[in-house]
Image (tube, rainbow, N blue to C red; front, side, top):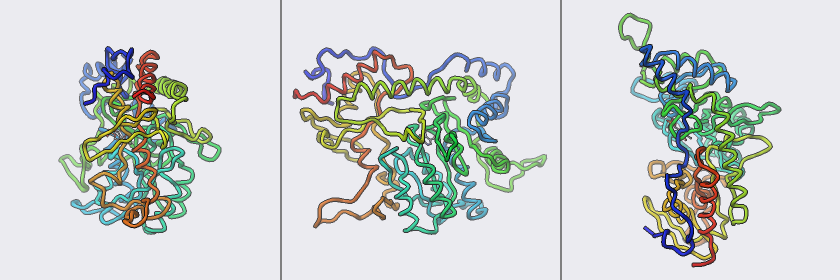
Length: 439
Ligand SMILES: Cc1ncc(COP(=O)(O)O)c(C=O)c1O
């Protein structure tokens, strides 16, 4: 590995004494009280007051009628996707998914937990390219996808890094094609979107919605997630499926396939203690984003974008995107990479490794799903239509692919809300030095 500490460009920069994290849990002490209470009252189970309170408080914060506490965001997305599949295509046999043989349109630059539930249910994900304004699903490419696959009836949409996607356009397209939406708001809890004249919370914009309390999220229970809905029937079904689909009989009786997906009352205790701090965490994350924006403004790069007219992100992760003409050589294989320093230029590979050398954690942009080995044979639709097979031995270029361009030129910056101003200034200085003209 390259020795940044001996590189003359970095003279005078000290290593961080303690690691600066990408996004780690921020505890406040109140969490302990609810965990202790659960233990003292012996509600150490998937039943208990902490779960009830988390469900009630989050439903009220988000402005939806029902929240169901689950083991994680992935389980919430799985049951949301299954509900959609059942509504669209009917009840599946016990050994078959509700989406068997069906295509589903979905976000491309997202974490794979958004997409995998489609496969759990036997469906086939079709990836929709990303737009440059918010780094989320491109409505124009979605329209193109309906031209290619007019039978599709389900869309899974995620909001990347806490910035809401173009939901008004996406919903209009979904309505025009009689399609349902599963909304993955795992990363965007507390982000707001202006729908018509009304500001609404992400996590309430789809027909079936999910959020996550994973350890790196804006508030956390170490794990945990919620299914969100205005339908009592849907909420009841999810609660039933998540507790092994038990029927009201004196013995274990099952008419449907079940899952062990319910939230633990201990984990709910941590989440209960975190909820009062959600707005404070968002404020801290926003301040981090603004400080990066200011500190990096002289460099050939931009921050992860959002639509200020239509949305207020939760600023979960701050990211940067290097201008194309300031990109130094950087190639990635399947599991390794090679970068070269070029004076006045840099690359995500160089910046991430420089930050690591000094003790700060960044991360590459989530690798687009259409580029992942597991999904490489799945369809990918861009603003030009079919996004596969566009390269040609005889002509230059390979077609539009916004997601892979963001992956190539972008990176996630340390965005921990406990990062001090001094630490962040040092991260900013490291990035500046990467672009030094001295070689
Ligand atoms: C976009 C997205 N969807 C889903 C998940 C899954 O949530 P969980 O880890 O709680 O299962 C995550 C993160 O973990 C995520 O970032």
